[in-house]
Length: 116
Length: 110
Image (cartoon, rainbow over all chains, first blue to last red; front, side):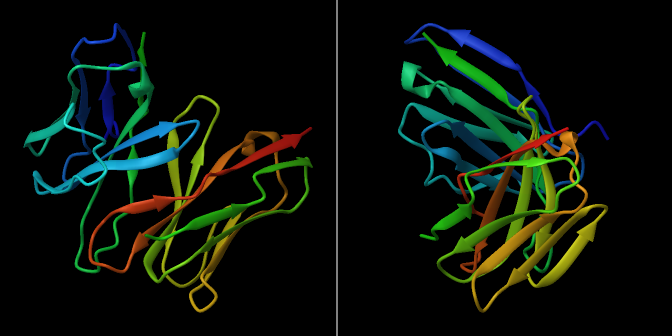
């Protein structure tokens, strides 16, 4: 398996533009996580899905952020409109939710977003 | 909310030295992860543990549930071990959220 695949790897956009980040989880995994990493706040969970259903989106900073998972092999994180403070590295991770509820996390390479 | 603290924040050591990185958390957890982030930015999961000890090659992770403390050890350290090591905990509250420490930046000098 190629692992968790994120695209694009880098994105530079102007303030006010819509940004869409994409993630393909590892085949067979049933949970997917979106994280944001900044120098100031480190890694933070934005939202996670289980069986394509959003379970906890309490980390989504505001209404400008939205995430979808239309099927088991694809998820998007959208920012509209983007602002300079959204500049960060966004990671997607997937895992397998088992009976013990302990899930190994496999991370994608991240998308470095710069909003100017 | 669980508070996760790592120490030290930065660590520089000579090649071959034994390395210990510590992680403490404030409330009960269901699992603890150790992650490695290389300068290129990718994150790799090293260990997931809920009790005892795990070993993989030169890496050893231990956890003491009563003391709410975990350590990551690296034996015979090598320059390629230079990375940021991040501790993350999963709550006992039946969800999959991870709370992250701020990371330990390790530099191994040849």
